[in-house]
Image (cartoon, rainbow, N blue to C red):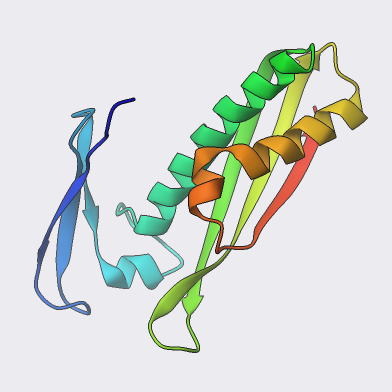
Length: 145
């Protein structure tokens, strides 16, 4: 399997500096990052590590869920997945991720609500990004649309 790469160029202090994160492998873009925007309610056109984790987690989860639906005898028509990643001060110092909420609504042929809930929970536990984030509380809200 391939290795994917991103890189960040940062200038200045945490409070006053900023940077750009480049999605190097895909070459699809370079995005501004800054700590003040990371800690603010309004991202104001910048991304953050938490948003990038959310993107990685929601897409990985959707792929894993699609595979498990097929293994369970269903056919996914649409899966709408969001990941909400929360950041807060860490009592030990600095900051930490306090939790991730995965929300999925699916249109699936061949599975009832209980079977969908079962494979949705299995996907939460088995997607590679969930495994990488094992130290973070990950919750799931899954339902058929």
